[in-house]
Length: 502
Image: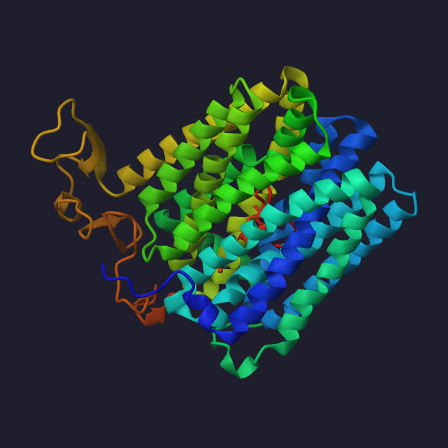
């Protein structure tokens, strides 16, 4: 397919430039705060389990109330919502800074502020991600999603390193202070936007009953949404617990301090930034890419867990970042592009609830495993669960598309050794040869190409559920799960690392 977008196409749009500039500043502050928060809790308690509890509390509101955040995002003007949520996140950051610099901070206060950050994130995450399409339109949406992830990961590259220096030199309080002040940047960007240049997106009616149930039924009837969200849930819950694992490796395996912890986070961020830039160049969203990235991500985590030396462990964090970010952006874009605009807020809130909301389960579980059996076993178990879930979801998607796995011991006629091919006796839609541009039918009434992309015109239009034409449009962490992410997140992309600010 001929490339129609460049790596930085979204930056040609003024509103998006304002949004991205504010985001990179606040994301840097958020990563500084996140590293300082994890290290502060570890310093106070000496427990990886306590770090897991902090992470769990920050994302518990997403598990409890996440779907309601999507309803709000679908009903009300997104720019006004973001002005409120970004101001609230800044105020919470300044509160934690005041407690720490005043020498009054206790672990329960950190827990409380983490929970309140999560409450704000319930609304901020789906609103921020779906606001991207209003800024750039459907044709540039894939590129903007990837650039959001690159933005978040660039901040992740700088933030942890600066935080490590600050914590060592003057303590955690100043990292929290910088984070609180950093939210002035996105607030300024939102205020300076030209609202006349925003794309008009249909909003759900206010006061409508049953909108939450309608969103769940919408997802349940579409395998192209259900299975990616299931995979996101498993990988996000068990594979993205880097605050627990990296702090434990720095402290207990390598007998180092906050500087090493910050460096390890920066190495993952370097790989994630590379992955985001590569994703920005892709013009198609493939479900096979989603499954392959999750599989490689899990296997690399398992390999890193048994690395015998510090430098080998550190080196492996770079490709872990590449494939983790590839997984995040592919999942985000594929779900948004497969969703009708009026439903997007609710679908993305479910997506974020599964991705980020799994932390209250995965954080304490992985923290307990890490405390009980050691950092290596904790990291290994998370990687193996992620890899196994990728295999399971890949087989489920193949079955839904009428395909089976073919393994050939010899390469003949240019055929790959491992490939999905139509099942014997499958119906006509599945019986056609499966090539890069050929189609296979997925239950739910949607035709998708064999690589997982939705079939339709280049402008993103397709036939909606009622038979009318609708425009399919789509936006870490931000990673981290804002992302992620995390923007890419967010999550904040949680990189599990999706953070509250995204």
